[in-house]
Image (cartoon, rainbow over all chains, first blue to last red; front, side, top):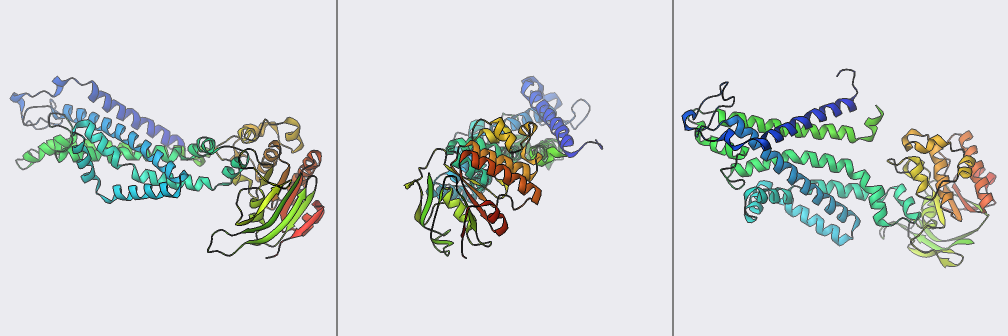
Length: 274
Length: 200
């Protein structure tokens, strides 16, 4: 690692993180329901070699539930972030390229969405859309696009004034042609990094809203649900249902965050010259 | 063909003072006009107005007595002072040229552009090399008038001489109208057939 330059190190780290996240997702997605089925003969067991994360009050293996829950979190995070980032790109570009009225309307909408705390807005939208995974994804997607939309709007506005865009216009190229060929490739790094850095937010909001009881249904193994249930038992000394799933969630969030940083380095054109 | 501007005035916003007021000039094909003025007197603004990049507050830019049509390849092309800003940094040089038209080997050879440069990114070339591409791009667009806005100011004298020799040769062959914007009197005296002085 010591002889590697920053670009290679970032690529390697990014690849390891991606493999790790894919492995967690696959493990959860392929896991049979029997792996975390209730077993009343082994309820409330502390962590041991048989049950690394212990068991809950119904005797369900917490490691299996955590992995399954993380897989659900990754699904929600990835889908919600993708939808959110696409909304951000469309809104940001429309705002920068459209008329002053469009720009003012978008600025007003962004202020409106940012003005309400995310968690409350996600709860309201998720509740209005019938809760469950779909409601949660719609809620998170509809609230997380604002910051990235602002970044993309600013980037496109800056690009619009660049000399190479003026040259392209004088060479007879149309607005849409310039947007696709000159501008969009420039906003790809911001888009990708914004998208990846949105994952941890989306995952945390999914967990928070499920924790509050407005997100995923209680029978679904989700980190938010596990943490919410663990609160009833933590005062009786059962610490493991709160600590292990909580720590696993933090690890996944940090992994996504690190992945975003690695991508930022990789997509920076000047790092290619190292 | 004749490029002229009549009674041109410009300011960046209604609250700011005029940079240009009631300015008129004209250039014919094959003519080389020098536009001279100290820094900050509106030379680059005038160049952008003539090239159709900026719109005047009043007055008009005419080609053979008619307003230049918007849309399509403009017959007046501007070459900027900083070539690295006038080229998309994410494009290879071949694509930069192809934006204007199919690169002509004789034209590239005349400008001293080596074949291997076409596969490179802008950051892999020097300022002088990039400016040659900007000239080639303007020529490939079949422009009738070229405005060179402080085109060689940032280069050493040898590069300046090389670039101007290539530019004058191309302008002569194609009978282009050339507007040389500079604050360097000696350069303009050397290159141009007539001189217009802008006052601050």
